Length: 311
Image (cartoon, helix red, strand yellow):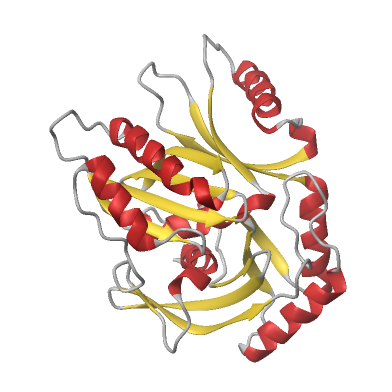
């Protein structure tokens, strides 16, 4: 029976979202359709060089006025100038994500929080007070130890983007790393294991999903020439993490490959070699997203994923 308080308990997210990258920005408005989602408004624009320099611990915006103008032109062309409520996907390289495990015996919430803050500083190289954090509690590990999926962005970096949003009149209630938007397309009710591989200027992020929840996450920092070897290592690790035994078919039934620095065909070949099975990367139709016109799925996957949280 539906919980009558559910609408009061769960926040309402907007059906409009923006995605910002070092060289491009995009905006999307979604609507629910039978069997999936449809893009009702969208646009993408290339940004001038060096306007956005994605970095976790350094200033990101060398020319805020140029970014403001580009975003204004973008939402105008998309017919979304009057939209005020937004979700935003930040550049992947501007954020850090990790799974934090609270080891040892903890007898109180206070002890868990103390260990959590210590882990944050060791993991991200900054104190919790210096970071804006979001966390999702995951299933405990095999030893029944608490696990949290944590996304972090330096407060100074976030404030640069928030100043732009304020100048546009945006109320950006949900600001998250790019991969969080993209992984929403693997949260579609399947009970098997799905894998997101998303590339960025500094390497790629790999998120292993079990059903609708993240199981493991790895951020890999490497040159483009090193991607093949790193991908092979990640796939072997995730094959074991997914619970596949030698000789068994690994439990991967969904593979989502996004970003300019990962060649989908090459990833398919590496997956075949590492896993011994053929896994074809998903496209927009496979995840239930209808995109009118010639806009590419890779371009809008992150903001569209955040926009689908409206339902």
